[in-house]
Image 1 (cartoon, rainbow, N blue to C red):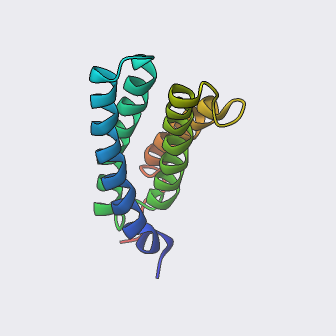
Image 2 (tube, rainbow, N blue to C red; image 1 turned 90 degrees about the horizontal axis):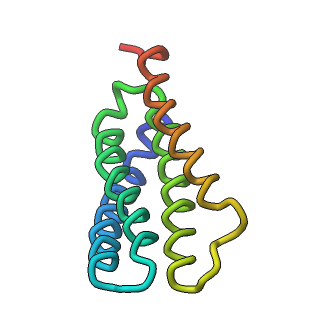
Length: 123
């Protein structure tokens, strides 16, 4: 079983979790007061990456780098959004540079998607 196939259920899981978290964080940003910009930014990242993970799961047999892209997007979104949400509720982030590290991981995930155009899956 390929790494892509093994990661497929994880991609579906996090697509759903990021989708629901994105909607909840958008509601928090709209109605929660406080530092709404933190919740709004976390919401945007969750909602941007939920459909990307779903697409990676659905197309994993055609994109050799789907496992790497999905892994980086999951870790990056968890770090980025998690740091902002933690900062919003506690006044302190997860750890120094958690959000930028997550941002870099998400960007690398998108580059892994692009690399899939070069490193084609075997037919």
